[in-house]
Image 1: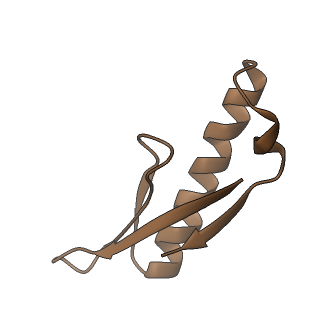
Image 2: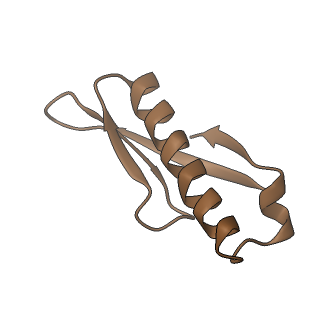
Length: 68
Protein backbone atom coordinates (compact mmCIF):
# COMPACT_ATOMS: atom_id res chain seq x y z
CA UNK A 1 0.00 0.00 0.00
CA UNK A 2 1.42 3.37 -1.00
CA UNK A 3 0.60 6.46 1.05
CA UNK A 4 0.88 9.91 -0.51
CA UNK A 5 2.44 12.64 1.63
CA UNK A 6 1.22 16.18 0.97
CA UNK A 7 3.83 18.81 1.82
CA UNK A 8 3.29 22.54 2.24
CA UNK A 9 5.41 25.40 3.50
CA UNK A 10 3.60 27.63 5.98
CA UNK A 11 3.94 31.42 5.94
CA UNK A 12 6.10 31.26 9.08
CA UNK A 13 8.64 29.01 7.32
CA UNK A 14 7.63 25.72 8.94
CA UNK A 15 6.83 22.73 6.75
CA UNK A 16 3.63 20.72 7.15
CA UNK A 17 3.51 17.12 5.95
CA UNK A 18 0.31 15.11 6.03
CA UNK A 19 -0.91 11.66 5.00
CA UNK A 20 -4.47 12.37 3.93
CA UNK A 21 -5.40 8.67 3.76
CA UNK A 22 -4.79 8.48 7.52
CA UNK A 23 -6.94 11.10 9.28
CA UNK A 24 -5.00 13.09 11.86
CA UNK A 25 -1.58 12.01 10.59
CA UNK A 26 0.19 15.34 10.12
CA UNK A 27 3.40 16.83 11.42
CA UNK A 28 5.39 20.05 11.29
CA UNK A 29 9.13 20.25 10.70
CA UNK A 30 11.75 22.95 10.44
CA UNK A 31 12.69 21.62 6.99
CA UNK A 32 10.83 19.70 4.31
CA UNK A 33 12.91 16.59 5.07
CA UNK A 34 12.24 16.92 8.80
CA UNK A 35 8.48 17.18 8.28
CA UNK A 36 8.42 14.16 5.95
CA UNK A 37 10.46 12.03 8.39
CA UNK A 38 8.19 12.96 11.28
CA UNK A 39 4.96 12.23 9.39
CA UNK A 40 6.32 8.88 8.16
CA UNK A 41 7.17 7.88 11.73
CA UNK A 42 3.73 8.94 12.93
CA UNK A 43 2.02 7.05 10.10
CA UNK A 44 3.94 3.89 10.96
CA UNK A 45 2.91 4.22 14.63
CA UNK A 46 -0.74 4.59 13.60
CA UNK A 47 -0.51 1.56 11.31
CA UNK A 48 1.22 -0.52 14.01
CA UNK A 49 -1.55 0.41 16.45
CA UNK A 50 -4.17 -0.73 13.94
CA UNK A 51 -2.34 -4.02 13.47
CA UNK A 52 -2.12 -4.60 17.23
CA UNK A 53 -5.86 -4.07 17.53
CA UNK A 54 -6.77 -6.32 14.61
CA UNK A 55 -7.87 -3.43 12.39
CA UNK A 56 -5.20 -3.93 9.73
CA UNK A 57 -5.88 -5.25 6.27
CA UNK A 58 -3.32 -7.44 4.45
CA UNK A 59 -2.25 -4.50 2.24
CA UNK A 60 -0.72 -2.81 5.29
CA UNK A 61 2.00 -5.45 5.44
CA UNK A 62 3.75 -3.74 2.50
CA UNK A 63 3.82 0.02 3.07
CA UNK A 64 5.65 2.76 1.18
CA UNK A 65 5.44 6.54 1.01
CA UNK A 66 5.48 8.98 -1.89
CA UNK A 67 6.10 12.66 -1.28
CA UNK A 68 3.94 14.90 -3.44
